[in-house]
Each structure stands twice: as structure tokens, then as C-alpha cells.
Amino acid sequence: MNAIILSTNLGRPQLDPGGSQRQSGIDKRPVDSLEVFAPGPNYGDGSGVVGDTVGDVKHHGGAQKAVYAFSREQLDYWQDRLGRELAPGSFGENLTTEGIDLAALLINQRVRVGTAELEVSTSRQPCRTFGAWMREAGWLKAFIGHGHCGAYFRVAKPGVIRAGDPIELVGRPDHDVDMFTLFAANTGDKQAARRVVEARCMPEMYRGRFEAMLP
Image (cartoon, rainbow, N blue to C red; front, side):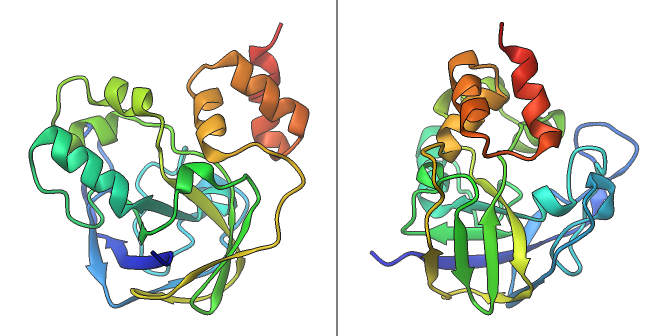
């Protein structure tokens, strides 16, 4: 199966389902296309998708979390496990992919899609908003335990992405830290954190956090 963008999704603003008095963009719905660009370096600088909504500006948006992707294969896994339909965008992703294992992508891997070029940046950190949105008891623990978090991307080259666009890997980073390992590190695995630190594949804003986990 060829790797493609199955759906492009845009956030519809709503009150944060996690109870905070702010808007949330976790409710993503399919649209014809997305225009992506590189936002400023800080979380408060907003989404890298034109017209998208970022509610929690302390933890989302900015250059390192410009675009979020999740695979149809993993939506299908949770759909079967939870016994309910999960449409594209159900996990708050801008891009629903098909035919690519996002967990196996190396950090800093370049990806060409549509007229844009993206770069694998960091992992999702499941939060209260996500838990409330899913309405499943023990959701965050289950999601973390499964280990497949999707992937955040930086925008290396602005452009337009449409459903059906092929996903092409460009080059290869000079380390072996993949998204599965980074997610484990971000959720407390010290051995994974050591691998991330030794690979020196993360920006300073993240690297210090992992270094603090190590003896």
C-alpha cells in the first residue's frame, strides 16, 4: 500500500471539553485541503495550519507542534477496541494518514507531501482535554500504554496538502530514535530518555527535560 494523506482536517473551535475556560481545537473535521506554514518558535504562536484552532497555547502550536498527524490504521485499532466509529480527525489530527507507520518515523525525518515539506518534530503528550474528549474511563493510561501517539511535524517548506497526496520520505536522519521511542521517553521511560539524549536529536527546549530524568 502506498503512503498517502487520507484526510485533511481543520479544528472547529469549542469550549475545552476538559473543563478549562478556553477554546479547544480538538474537534477536527475533514476539509478539502490545508495550507501549512511555519509559525513562530513558541507554543503561543499558534498552529502551522491556516484557519486551525489552538486553545492551550502553553502546550500546543508553535514551530515544534505546527501540524499533527495520526494514522487511519491506529484509528481502526481503537475503533475495534472501543466499539465505536472514529472518523478522520477524531484524535484531533490535522492529517489522517494511510499506509505509513508514524511510530517508526525517525525524529527530524523530512517528509514531502503536496506542495509542502514537513519534518518530524516531537510526540503528543496526552492531556486532560484529550481524555475528556474521548469520554472513555482510563483513556490516557490506555493510550500511553499502546505507545502509538501519531506525530507532530515542523513545517520546513510552506504549501498546500490535499487528501490523496502521496507521502514521500526525503533523506534520512543520522540516528535511530523513532517516534515510538520518543513517546516512551516523554511518558517517563528513562531508558528511552537516555537514547534521546545520546542521539542529540531534539531541540534544547526538550533535551533539558530528558536530561533531568537521568541519574
